[in-house]
Image (cartoon, rainbow, N blue to C red; front, top):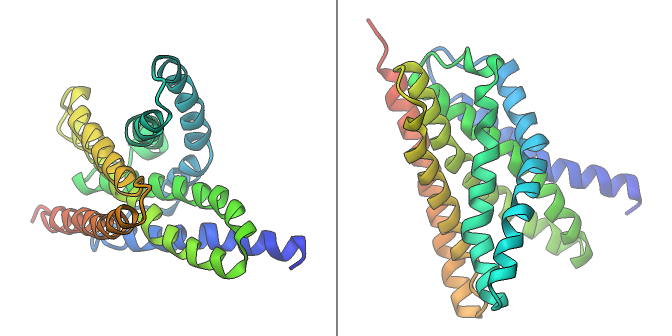
Length: 238
């Protein structure tokens, strides 16, 4: 393939699945669906600023860890299971603090939706970065790996960040202290960290078992988020 065709293919495979998931998540809500402008803002934030900020934060947090830990395997696991989830789950939902999104938080399920959309934006750019490296494996492998990422990576980021969004949204709605967000932030880190741990095994049997568990986990995780959105959506006055 020529360079233009390759670039178009990479962009489509990276951004189309997350965009479809955005519509799916938004339309989970039956009543008073969210406006497209704040939805797009959340997606773009996740795909740009959140990615850059997370990368910087991961580097800054990783330096003291690298200095204090000599075992390379332990360092890799801690980075994947602790540092990366912390940095990414911190930067993705910050868009909910912007007035254009914050003023839309008038229902408890809104935070879940906006958080998930920010996560999907992040997943899109992550797909792009991974997809570029997948191209070196050949076209068939590229499609297989991108399909896997379109399912696992997208649903992981959506379902994890949705909970931080829910914590932030509910603190706004109920006029609670901002500390209300912390338990949901920790939950997001745990969801992200568990997934990363499951796909970090190096032995073939361990990787296969972990991969299967990770796929089941993200499927359950996103369905739990959608069920929560549907339940809250039905609780309308009158």
